[in-house]
Length: 353
Image 1 (tube, one colour):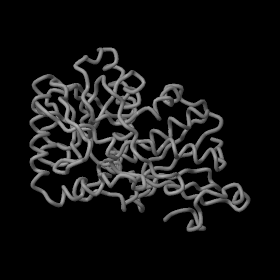
Image 2 (cartoon, helix red, strand yellow):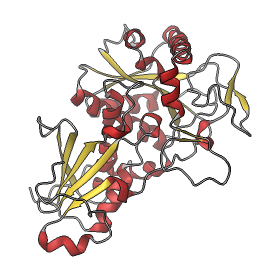
Image 3 (tube, one colour):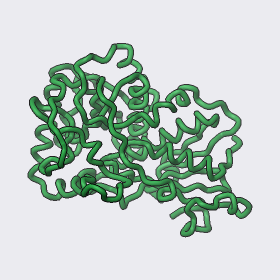
């Protein structure tokens, strides 16, 4: 394999595309480090952005980083390169989640490159969807997208959807009486005064969507219990179309694969004209997560519940600038080429933190 060495503009573009991925509470729990001498871009977990009460085993953190990894693969293929990925390459460093080299000689995956236009259009929508059913052919493509990443996507029957809605209500009731969990969520809701500096992470007021009115809905209300000026009410769909994304095993490497599968499903849905939001409430309580699975599917571990349908696009969530999430360890001859990319505190060895 001939590894492609990247200039600053190309590297910045790849990482910017990667960070359009979804993550729990839009915490963006990732960082990147480019080893210029080796042509390797490393993906790290950022423990400072973990959610210890919501996500105590860091399963959601790994999924968010997996989604960012998938976006990086899409971006690389669209640019004409074949990404070569190693998951968890260093057992001694669990924060090092992946190493990515770009093969300049192998052909890129055209299916991944075709998803590139969906990257900037994919946003979680917490607004009401229509009752229009998703066509069988599109459902099949979404299932194939999950399968391509080593995961499984299942559309549960009506009875199980009703049970899932009850489980969401149960999870919300538990959160309502858990001050630590409520406080952790509130820290990521950006509902500051008008004129305040825009945030670069978290859930913005525009992305909250309207307050819920009427029947149970799986849309998470991040502002529950807090008044948000100008926020209205809406009736959500009576029959939400939910899908369960799962894996056969349940460890860090499976969570990374599930995150890649999740993003492949979401980008495929976006390309097919659908909007989506994630339903993670029931998965944050072990006893509820166990009964979230559809016993008729054979799915071992549910990693995400996805609400899909036709409706208004979601509002873009803020993103941290690339300079905050990318470090470059240059080779001596390339140092000048990376001026402007953060590197004032970069190490001089092989890039390990």
